[in-house]
Length: 445
Image (cartoon, rainbow, N blue to C red; front, side):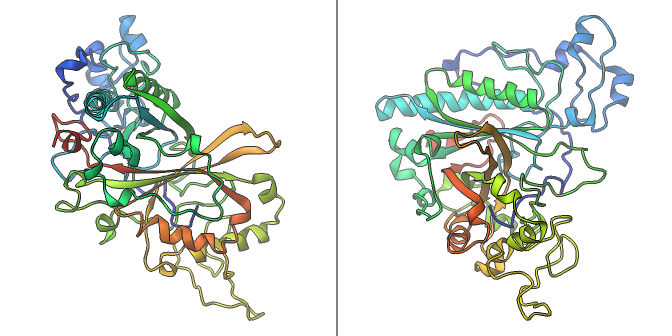
């Protein structure tokens, strides 16, 4: 966890026209499904008037089945993200998309087989997954065997993002095409990693602003894996729901801290250079892609909550009430790292989390952080099994995550209150153009 975290409400998702579904390969045997739009027919003027964002002409399936006038979706339900991009160099959804209120992270290992068989299975799986993702992100049911869990909802800003772990390349005979950026992360002294919940051949991130929509997508992805891949681990998370605050605000983590103030913004001049692999970069199949570091960070909440408010703020280096630096101003005010108090001591302590993780303290290292909180009940020791599903994006982990984590590892005041329990690093290729599937430029080159 560091100070350059993501803001859930910095931008507003706008609904877009639903993209055509990706075309599945003939060997997938999937028949096209009936879209929710076609099932309901035209919503008509009354329905259209109720669509605050206007992107998906959705309505309640129950009403349509009963012959009643369709009910227009609320703004949260109608908002959608595109699965396909306009061409080479675009990005998958779920990276710069504003934080959704619920999410699932899931890793798979390919089924055993020789490299040629594994590569063929992987290509077929990515075709299925891409076709399913395109349908679901447009607010449509899956092409076959849909569970009906999300029948009453629109896409709710659903995003499904796919990545490849280092072991994927060994299993598919593509070792020569594995990016150097996927070299294993260095060990850190604070790591308490569980190998069973780390790494994986394939990684999928799902996010939505409705829990049933997110679960529906999760089940579809799991079913599509069939016998080509098995689940290695799954983690479930959440964030504040859209509209829960009187005005857009940076989200808070489970420690109660405003968490997302220093995140890079797409409007920054060097944003793309820091976060995405450029066209013409290496490897070519990663153009428009990014590298995701995933960490399950347990928060020792009982210990943290024993601290006084003043102690908590000195650990972080920011006010708990509004996220402003202890040196004054508001949330967006820069850290006055050299400012001292009447006692001659630094106002922001030298081991404060905000100071140590600040880009100016790490040679400008930056990463786009997009986490979810998690709570998995009570651990065996009787304490909350809760914390942060840390996900950060960068063009090169050795220039983003690694230098910052090394610095934090050497003396962050927050370290006694957190524990890194799982880790993964994944290459997330650029978004597919119409007619393509994710990873096609890697698997079919």
